[in-house]
Picture (cartoon, one colour):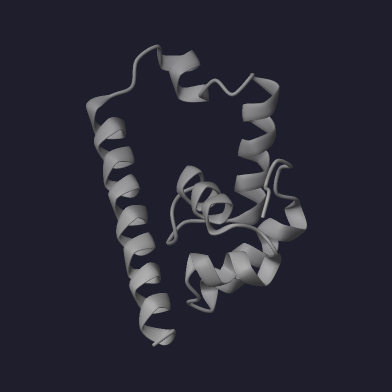
Length: 111
């Protein structure tokens, strides 16, 4: 699947609803017709699984587009705090773990 176009608000609302149903990000991607990477990236950029909201994600995507994909925090503060950097690393690791779990679950269901 090619995900060149941005996710729509409707797709993000579906993501939010399906997260609340405790579906994996891979399954959410399948259900909305997007790659798992598109879903994982959007969720990671917008608060992670526990804090994702469609409206916040849509607003953030628009702001990134308008600002030429520069991070708002970098513009306003100049340099990220060590806490922010650490939090981003933790979220990235959480997403990697979820990808691995999804892959293992997919492989086990195929046997």
